[in-house]
Length: 295
Ligand code: NAD
Ligand code: FES
Image (tube, rainbow, N blue to C red):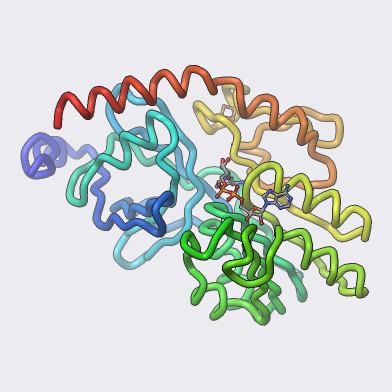
């Protein structure tokens, strides 16, 4: 309805709008929305991200693309509604529009000249690991996927990982899906047995990526991680997404988001990630109250 009125007028003025064409819950805590964004869909590749704003006065958040359909002009992103903006995004319904959806930004994940790769996805990060598996698998690369969730009831994309890897190793923290434990356990077991990879690619919570890197460093296995820090402009201008890589300051939005995991100062990144924790908590409470009042 909204699309046909205010946004319809904007369309007539030649302004691009970003309509939500699909919305689904992958599990009780992870949502997937698909946006009509033909210019992004035409060019995006695994590992790249978009910066979106839900409303005209909203904050910008970066989300890595998880799927796309170039013919239809659709792009999907997955997110956990944990902060004010992701909560607001989650309140949007199919058919409604969001204010901005800018991308593709950042560099794509490097997939050339690789023969044997281990792709590791942890929790919601698995949604971003999948398109990398798909691209590598389509190129004929020997892909071992290690996918970890806390529990069986929040697993998603199992069939898709199975279809796009030579081997899928499942882990869950509580032992209800695959082997009990975290993703680094099967990784270490394989490396200890003498397995070698041209590249290990890890996407998930910072703590997981840190421990994957500590594990692969012991066995001298090249490792790439996808960093997703707080961003504002996404074009290398504001410096908000800076991180230290090999002793040098890099900007995740233009130099990444993929980096050599063995060179990242993870402790600094993790400290910066909590900078706006209190503010987020306050905004989250305000947002929830607002929605309660409107309901
Ligand atoms: P989670 O806490 O459920 O962990 C997922 C898996 O990671 C676990 O099942 C386990 O196998 C592994 N893991 C966790 N701690 C580990 C450790 N210490 N050692 C080895 N493996 C470990 O993850 P979640 O709640 O789905 O993730 C949420 C976080 O992921 C958020 O902080 C979000 O910002 C981040 N995230 C990052 C990216 C990215 O691009 N890097 C993308 C999406 C989400
Ligand atoms: Fe501003 Fe990267 S988000 S420099």
